[in-house]
Image 1: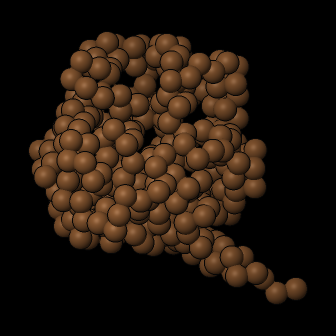
Image 2: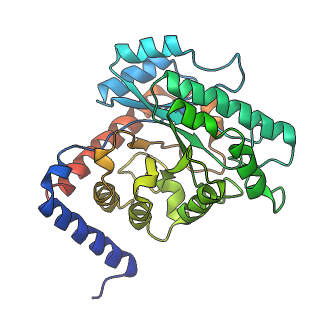
Image 3: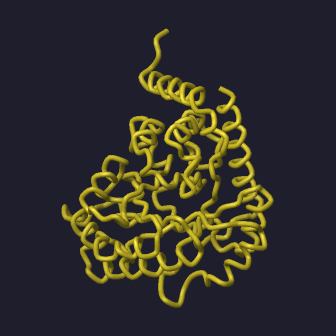
Length: 316
């Protein structure tokens, strides 16, 4: 029986992986940096969240970008103290963009709110030693478009604040999100076009999310290979947006793709699970209280399964 088209691509990636590993085994010694996006923990005490990650052997965290106003959000000194106690460092910051702070909004006050929010979060990212900040070109949870000029407004808004990423030495990571959750930039190709049109040195990277990629990309692993050094963070969840291993995601080929692009040898690159469950608007999770046992299972199942598959792949 002949291979299906996606299987043919899988085989090409596998062959390239094996060949590179044979030619340059030293590039495969370091493991991928595993992080965790904590905003899905909702209202849980931050110390409890960090204790869970420490127990799971996770050394990096993607912090909730919760500085929605000048008097809101994490206080750097307090957060650092807790993280240091648990041996955890900041990978990056998960920027949160809703209709209230929308770079593409047709209301100028909402665009200004997005600009001000980015200024606060970029400063916080630098204070915490983070490597990147996730940026959504339009509101998440608003799939219906305002009009046909959203891309232009979004690019104009971000261009007005993009210098902060250069000034703080952090990467702005544009995230493509599925059409069920946002109105523009749904694929890696569209993210690349957005970045090219913005044309700013502070905005040169992509934050991938395999759940969104399931519907946005024809082949997830190939899209990662094609992104190459533009990829700086990869959100992970299985096909049902639950813990890794709970669905039918081809995680092995994704791991091969990441090693192929040297993702394990870049100190600014992370694999960051964000299992939020299915639904059109995941943002309510940030204000929820979830049974700690459920969160424990999400974390431990995901990290254990990922590391198991990573070791299996590296046997090839």
